[in-house]
Length: 107
Image (cartoon, rainbow, N blue to C red; front, side, top):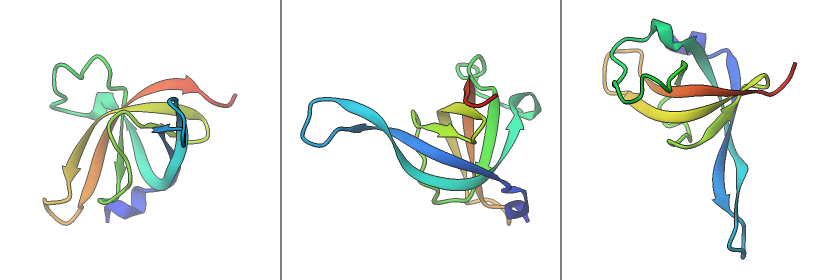
């Protein structure tokens, strides 16, 4: 099953309003296991996203992730640009998160 490929741990950070203040900051909101693959293996990426999408992450339906979140795998950071819900088709139900690799976190 597709869950067997969820071998990489990710941390989700989201822009969150600082309590009682008029400022916002990225805060850790969730963790999940997923599968990362390069976008060159993807087909039918919307043309307006094609210049930004470098990778796709598959994860379980119901994962707490939103467009504009930043996810980290301990090595790289990725900006979330789109989420395709594949939880209504077939037996391998999953979310396909289209991301752009943005920053090397560790060397």
